[in-house]
Length: 105
Image (tube, rainbow, N blue to C red; front, side):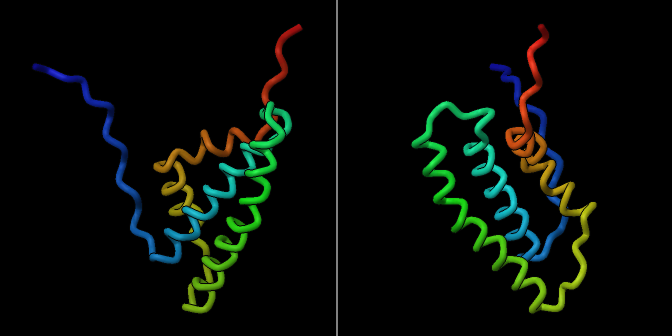
């Protein structure tokens, strides 16, 4: 039996534990903002729950940055972290925060 496998994702770049946490928490915030986006949601209760979770997610994001700073990680390597976010489907996740395109008239 021959199965078709999905394409293999590129490997994540090497990250410190704090950088990995930063990426994870940032993507979590994006996911929640996408669920809250009034241009994309149809359910006030789901948006409310996402807004409530956003405060906790923002705290996690702050904590990740605090750990990085405390460990002497003064620079954010944007290119490396962007590659990690792309591997973790960050472009699609960030797209949910954007306004949808207007339908043609």
